[in-house]
Image (cartoon, rainbow, N blue to C red; front, side):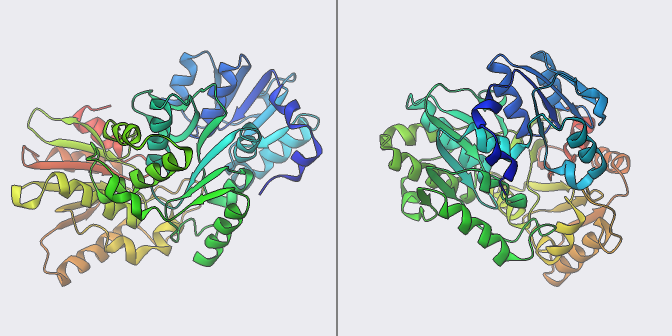
Length: 433
């Protein structure tokens, strides 16, 4: 929800800050705001718990980034602090110290800051359980190709720009709007796209009805809502990215183009040239033995099914292509709440390898594990008389050794999957980065 603090201060004063510190600057969304501030000529600094591709790129642009979390990293003359929403919940002592130490400095969460920077823009927000990133990127490409020069904040790296942020000069602002902790309610969109609504983030929401209530509230503060775009599906051209889920995302993008009065042939041409985004069924390369390697961010059962369907579209079983999935479940709460759905989500794969659960913001929950998930998937396949192989590994090293010994060849497709760090195994084994 919007912090009441913002109603007591002039948002133009926030935007005029000359020196800004970002706590958790390596986050995919917050780093986009950091880039925006940097391009505006502000002094940008930040901290994060570890190095990443994002922090390394920001450093190249001159951003000073400290590793770890310490109040002493923040200069006394700082004029604005922006923090990732995980901080108050998972490091409350640091957050209290932050507020007490800088009690006269505006301190905003990333969603609150997003609300500030989009306040006077023609905001096109893309929300939903799945497809947000791809749909946002598709809409952005259509607007850019149409000469509308939008600003874009997306939850991945756009391949053509190698960035999660595009600085535009027009009134248009295209943004991916996340539902976690009702973050998206900080935005008041001119156009709201809802791709779909399913049960997720159940560590925060009570149930599906609770999730729907958040989307309904977002709808109420939006001028135009696009949630039924089925009629545009027949107008979607042949895409470079596979799967019905990508075609549905493209249909949503065409619906936005229609609302904006963009020529349909121009929008279709833009979609034909769309090459995808980072970690969304991204083809990493082909090994010298001929194995095709992909990386995918899918971390929800529906997303896993959609990605495997897309891969099978490209590599059907009749062509004797075997798909090996190395999946890292994301969060104990999600794995536990959607356990039965996860069990049935890998039917398109021939071999399923599971890494330990990436628990990120949670404490360990021994009632659920990758081993238990692997056993349940095995039982599911046995009931279907399917010959798929399933194995769980206690750590990354043992998974790397196993994959090395598979002797994958030209009939194999290998995909790392999940919101965590499964991709590191492929980088190590196949020397892809």
